[in-house]
Image (cartoon, rainbow, N blue to C red):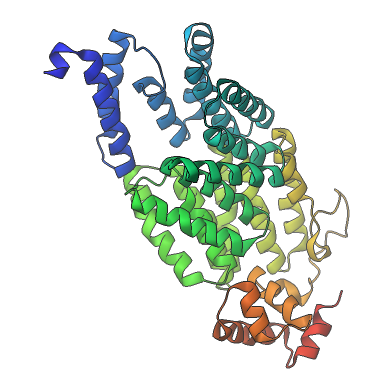
Length: 415
């Protein structure tokens, strides 16, 4: 009756249905959304925040059909600015910021996110969503420290207001930047909470919030390879069934890190090379650059200095073109004296790297703690591990570095 007598109500109902079906991974979500959009075009909705048109744009964003989404948003924005409500304008600026963050247009992302926050504060609305958007934009092109700060504010606001959707999103934004910054223990804790949040909401589609690849990487950095692999094995069939190709690329990046942790560095390097190229073809420069940074780390472990340097220089070029300042700084860091040398630096030969390059990041953190005098119990407490795990990891470190005591380990760690 609603579809016959009240097309506007029918369009709203179908839009809600499409949103739920997308989250649940139902195959006909797009068809339902197309029905809602057709009814909506005939009825001219009163606003866009809960309309089929903006949900269509969001779905394009989820699918990384970024050109389609951008074209629709840019056509819609002048109309909404002239005639729409302030809430609708905030919605568009927020969506534009998320879109530009994803496609690596970093200056535009920061500008749109700032406008969204300014309008939000002026209207006296909850700043939680705007802070989340700013966290995304700052992660792309501003400052990792500011990104973490905005994400924490969004977490707090979402908790206070009982906003489960933005609580999950803002925790994801926080966990991601913690991981990028190397704060693995904090990232692991945050991203595990995202996992709990998303499963409590029965979200199936992995493109809506891409926490799986981030949690897998955090698990690997924490030397929990089995759990990381199990998570990837869980999400990849779902992404394949739903046709989420760029989700699969993110999983490939994480899987390559698992291969490297297992000592299969040749396979890892090949997979990361293909993944970086595929991200480039998909129009995702920041994801391409991130895969290249991972490739550089693997190449260092393979003792291929010039290959590692080449990957980092390409990543730096990608980030510089995008205006991705924090990522550019990350690509120009120089751990172990092997990364981030200026172009033309070094001999270019495949000279052997220090033995420390054989350690995973988790092993290196433990080695440094023990080398500085920490007991097994102290190291376990600091790294949130069991003493048994510390003992097993130390055994592997000793084998890789060919040392037999803590004193020898401390010597091996000296520059």
